[in-house]
Length: 210
Image 1 (cartoon, rainbow, N blue to C red):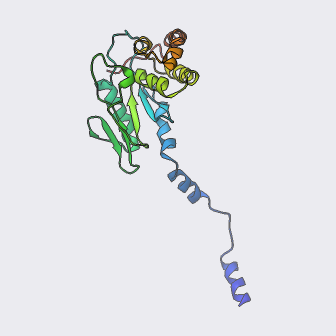
Image 2 (image 1 turned 60 degrees about the horizontal axis):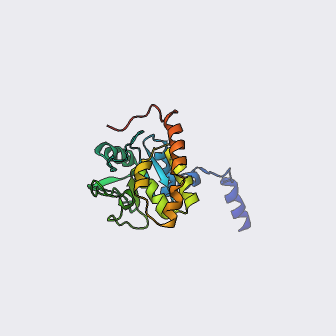
Image 3 (image 1 turned 120 degrees about the vertical axis):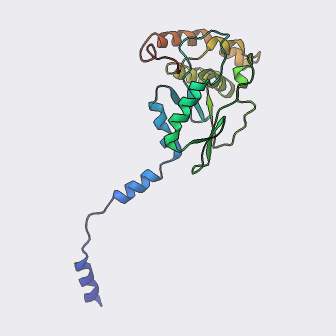
């Protein structure tokens, strides 16, 4: 018996381990969040916050505080096109779905001309695995609502060097709460940071989607 086993191993000698299948499996098993990061290469959309599950779409470089804050048609088309290669299909006016992953991207409906950007997603419930697709100003408002003042400022500072925010409109809708008033103190600083970013590349030559 031992001789038979020995001969069998001689006919099938052990070679170097084939790692290609292991690597392929690892690639297939990459989490959706990791695959989604490819959109950060796009100048017009970004994963603004993985914890809050927000995708932000570039709006404009300059704002008036009275400007409407909404996802325009070109902004919607941009995100629909960019998410299509990741398996997302539009199943209704404001919902993109990846059925294989069981994940939806939700674009809140425009509420009203004078509506607060803090309320943009109020009437758009989502599941824990879903994402919101928001304007930069709506995204910044989410930071103020969900993070402590210091963390909110840091998150907005990171956002505005990629996607400017209508900071004056945001400031107009701050509430009287201690948290919002603490944030209000630093709006001037954020406006300065944004002004410097807009005057420099790559933002200086970027144009709103048309």
